[in-house]
Length: 347
Image 1 (cartoon, rainbow, N blue to C red):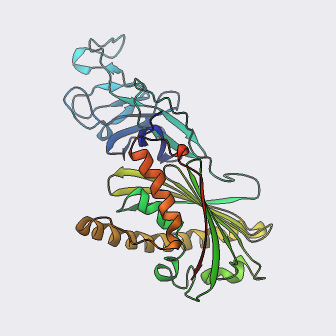
Image 2 (image 1 turned 135 degrees about the horizontal axis):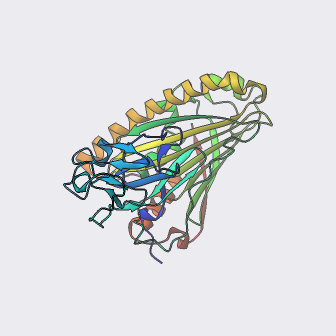
Image 3 (image 1 turned 90 degrees about the vertical axis):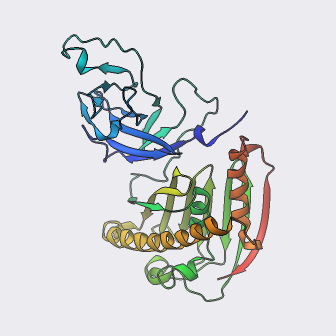
């Protein structure tokens, strides 16, 4: 069975962004999309192109659950079918002579996100894959801070950045780790299209908020995960009321533009509500630093090409690249052989 990046589900909006009569323009895998809700409130994603004279539907408006082209007023329903052509007469009792339809794409709504699959209704993939389930979203005792950022880099390089420990001491000094030459051990495994890195001997090198996150200095249970093709989830467990997940979904807009939706979901007990603004501020500060770092990386790759000099600590990168490389070649990464390596490194 072949597999492509079009087989997967990608975030195109927060549910709260897609309110009644809202029209959103989105780009996923170089495909222009117009996203809106039909008369029943169901999310709709059509190719952002009017089949009449090739205007952008996203520049139009929603009328009674149908998107209306801003050029000649053609209206399209939730399946992309032409529902009304003003030049053919009044809307009442109207049945368009044009039977054509715009390209439509499957959508799903889950965990406060609207997802799209860039596989047209007429060419459905046999691959059965569901949108990623966000850890503990709206679960009792848990709080979620959600942020959105655009990176000028590829999905692969974004995902690797989000689960890369060594860069944190250089890019985020103080705020998120400092250079202390502490020895850490990690086990990295590639299994069934996912990568898991489990760290040991990590205690208190967590930056400004170490005193709050792990006041007793216990050994931290820290696991980083990558799920094909574009999801990373970082888990810190420092006790019953000191747990945190940082989950990012990297959406490929174009070859080197990636829109990243990040959830920081945490359980800090009674501190949940009070901690939220500090979590949001810290997360956004760290992400802005990563945006700048990855912009520099992409500029250099554009000029000199993408050749990397790997070290043992880059095992997690190598595994992620093997999975995304398999999909790029039309193969199912779940068929790759399972691999596990143990690595010692210092930060």
